[in-house]
Amino acid sequence: MTSTEPADDRTPVDEELVEAALAVVRQYARGDNHTVAAAGRNADGRIVTALNAYHFTGGPCAELVLIGAAAGQGAYELTTVVAVADRERGVIPPCGRCRQALFDYFPEVRIIVGQGARQRSVPVRDLLPETYVWSDHQTD
Image 1 (spheres, rainbow, N blue to C red):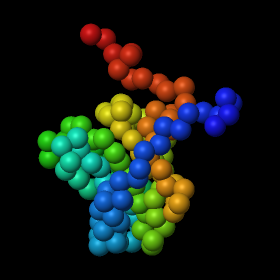
Image 2 (tube, one colour):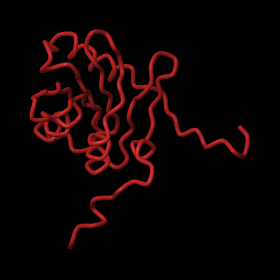
Image 3 (cartoon, rainbow, N blue to C red):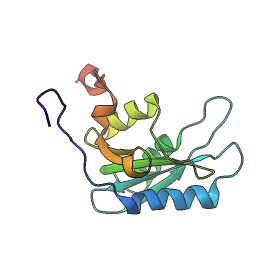
């Protein structure tokens, strides 16, 4: 590594988590309303899964549904999250809104991104340069 290259903050990809999301999208994705699944690993090792709920009014992405599903199961410490698309499109990165929401709820969460040999796990903060920190602007 040369001095001009950024430090590599990658960790091994959680293949079990990717497979859990793929299983959900393969089994339950139907039509245009449900096209993306997400899976998250909680600090205690549990895996929580979710499916998006597309609606013309802007229904929630799978990652946003995952945040609610995790809370509903008492999983308040997600450490890794991945989203996968239907029709065998594989791992997809979170949209901007989901990146911000994941950061706000789990500032240390890692996100699995990339395809095939390029898959990697990166801190959500790396996906949000010049991050807006919502909690910094809240009154006590």
